[in-house]
Length: 277
Ligand SMILES: C[S@@+](CC[C@H](N)C(=O)[O-])C[C@H]1O[C@@H](n2cnc3c(N)ncnc32)[C@H](O)[C@@H]1O
Image (cartoon, rainbow, N blue to C red):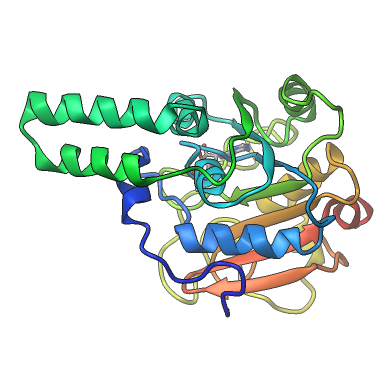
């Protein structure tokens, strides 16, 4: 993939300041910004955006967007697992007025208490960052396939009733980020971590090939995309990232864009296309 929206940059300051849950991998910063830029090209220019991460985990993806991407009005994070949501709140609070200053003061105190230069370095990093956006944000537990729970989380965060413009989801994969049990097909999901290796695509991602529609309709990633689309405006753009060669779509649905970077693949698709597919 050629980066069109995210020039190469040193994001060490960001890495020092963001908190991530051990064992829960997060999207690379540059890829996050690139995918948001590509999605934005399919949305009205200059409109302030509401972004929803339905698998928000520790909120790293959303916070990176707030720190680096201008024009974001609202960020909403939901996750089936409530455990990482406190971390998500802590990360997203960096976008509040005074949030980075408060984090720098906390890190200074830790540096003094533990005599650890790494905390002092992180405090310096926090002082160098200026958020590109200062969005309102909210975080709530919700399984992305539980439409009622998701609608309620989104409605609580939506003052204007317009809903999300952009969904950016790093799909579950691997040991710590398996799919939650399906609320619609009990016992069907809970995908075990597949063996690593180039021929064995991980989690919801699998090798491209002909005649995938029937199989893919059983795929938890496809179930996820269909469910997410039901709560979105048809013109909203959904970006899903997975591991492996491709991210499957429901049979017959045409993507807006597809990209591959290293062992990750991403698909950009209009919510309306997912609802019709
Ligand atoms: C790869 S992690 C996402 C990391 C996240 N973007 C971040 O910045 O920290 C995938 C997340 O999907 C969540 N998840 C699994 N099944 C889910 C479901 N059915 N609905 C919503 N979230 C789910 C997991 O709990 C995990 O936090």
